[in-house]
Structure formats: C-alpha cells, structure tokens
Image (tube, rainbow, N blue to C red; front, side, top):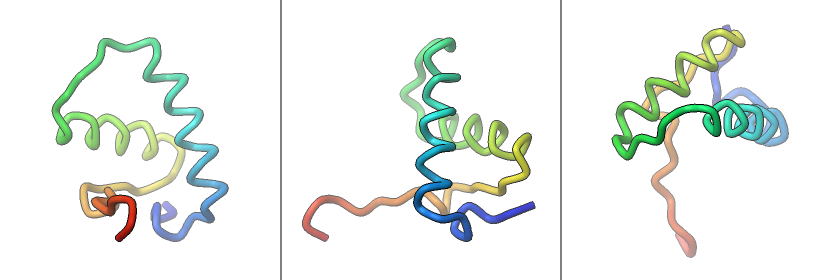
Length: 62
C-alpha cells in the first residue's frame, strides 16, 4: 500500500477529483473525522493509505 504523502501532487489531485465524483452521490456530512474515515476507506480500496495526519491545516499565506 502506498502512503498518501508519497504520491505525486498530480496523483493526489486525480484521486481527489475521482473521490469528489463519488461524494456527489452520498449524503453530506460536516464531521471532519467522518470525512477523513470515508476518504481513507475509499483510498484503501485503491491501495493508498491515508489518515488524519495527512490532512493539511495550512491556510493561504502560511
């Protein structure tokens, strides 16, 4: 299994775009923990490891 941080920026982008299409078919949630768990599960089925530590908390200008 590949680590999220080891993927190229383009690979990450492509996976995020594919996941957004998947999300569009699901009910929305506001809970960050639920969102991360769902994304991690979706990525695990694509042989990619993701956890809360992979979530960027950076804001513009930082």
